[in-house]
Image 1 (cartoon, rainbow, N blue to C red):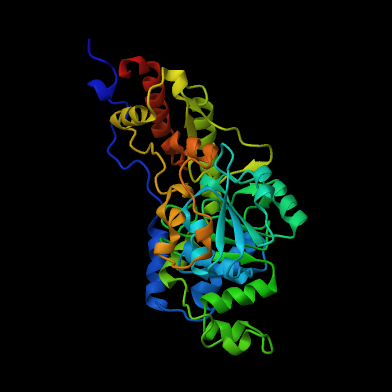
Image 2 (image 1 turned 45 degrees about the horizontal axis):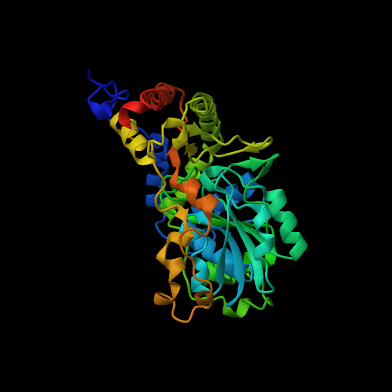
Length: 417
């Protein structure tokens, strides 16, 4: 008898041609705004025009005093570390599981990323931070993985106890909040990406947020030498004499990316509301599927739903390997089901195991990492199946098909053993 599973010759659940998810949404208004910028200026060396408009609107949206755009989220993280006073030899505690750019800029500053175990949701485990604090610890960097806010009240308590700086990587979490306070506003500074699939996208780009004037001046000096630094760093400030050169880097956003991000920012809350509706449906339906577990969202926490993740439980399906379950999903035409790749436990990456080959003499060499050191992060990463979260009402039919694909494989898993 032919199996109903597509992997074994049956009919696929999802028959629509892919891809089934594209981001950011671009319409005629978006195209007109980007085209208008093309005719206005393709280089904005100062804080003016579309760059000023975007930064002003970011400040208003997040409720902060300063927003400084950059060429990428990685550049924003690099600037935030430098601006917050991280120096050679300083240690910064970072989540073991995140995209490497959360911590990799520290190598260029000759500072030491210290990996911390995460919880099952992938975010830093606050109760594991304190054991890593040493006299060299300068800061704690938090990632809000997949747009799910970390436990910032607990992180801030640890930081305050040890007089540490709190920094945030909000690159997955634009618009997410905890009891009404937006992610990116809990520490001294935060960094965000505007990369293609992020909830707020400019195609490429990034930005730093801070309420602290000194951090703002240092960010400008680091990322925006010459015109912006001369105009924005006050005369008499110690950094003012370096305005022409700054720290030697030019990390400014491209005006076309700024125009796209500015258009998308005005739509962000609508996108997030739509995602929340689809996420509620997916969470409700997938939570009851044997073999899949979705970690509940704490009270008062509103994610951005950059991704919806389920932890695969092989013991509920006769120890069916996650690789087989995932192949079966793809065979059903549900091609957006994904297993995280480059966003992985960083102790598995050569840069964190042998940094000296790229950074000879780096102080990190006394703390090499190896696989197996972070059992929670490594296990959950290896068993995570991830979905993008659609935002339109008409996407609900596709979401329903993706749910049916998961249910079908769970129900017929014995045929795959």
